[in-house]
Amino acid sequence: MDYIVEIEGDYYEGTNVKLRLMSSLSPILRFGLCSDNLVNEHIFVEDYFNSSTRIRRGRLYVQSSYKSWRVSNVTPRPIVCTSDSAIINCSYSSALDKDVIATLTPGKEIFLGGDGIKSYWTVILSEKTISGAYSITLKSKTFLGVLSELLSEEIPANNREDIHRALNAVVEAASVHAPQPVIDACRVAATHMLLAMYPQITKNELGQIVGKLDNGSCIQSAANLINKLHSRAKPSGPANNDTRPVSQRDADLAVSAIAFLLQDFGWAERAL
Image (cartoon, rainbow, N blue to C red; front, side, top):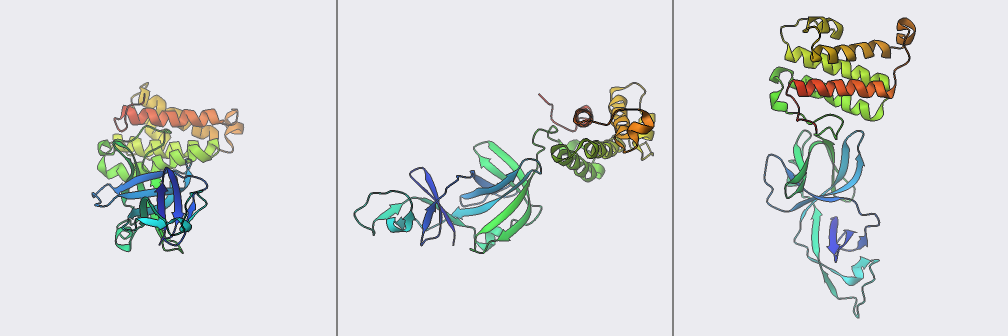
């Protein structure tokens, strides 16, 4: 079984046979299920994080009854000791048991952190490593600053899933893609949002929806901006419209228009 151990401020990992000093200290966080209060102390040790895709991967541990290791089993910490049989007492955690990991199915919501400072994540994959430890892959439930955080309960229930999916596509495109895919994603998101906000509109194309909005309103202007940028972003756009190719600044402008619509509809927290 894998363990992670804290000894006098340093962290070690290994088994009950041998512990090794962690050469690069990864973030070590408390974790728990959003839908349940776990009885034991649980921790998450990060192995990988990508802020662009908002993916985090790491190992899960739970409080263990195994409390001590012999000095000879701990390396390379320079502990001065007269006997290899001396015992090191320490804080400790061991890999999760199968009953706990069984609750961490895809779609399960968890939190990382504690004492009122938490981040929220969704489980997308649970795996068992060759050493018997458990690893989970998480996706952030927040937009990491690209857009304001959603007030999901304010979004019409029938449209909520489509809007969440479209906004996730905007955030992911904004982090890793060229301008055209970002603007394309904004156009899709704006279409879903406007149809949810104005269910009386029966058109499905953003340009047609813009024509049904109050002329000169800020909402119409934001939607029209995204629509115009989308026309420019087409491969034939510069030639057909006698315009320059779209830039990263244009993509940022489209994302800002989505952020404006979210706040004007009351579907996101107010930005600072």
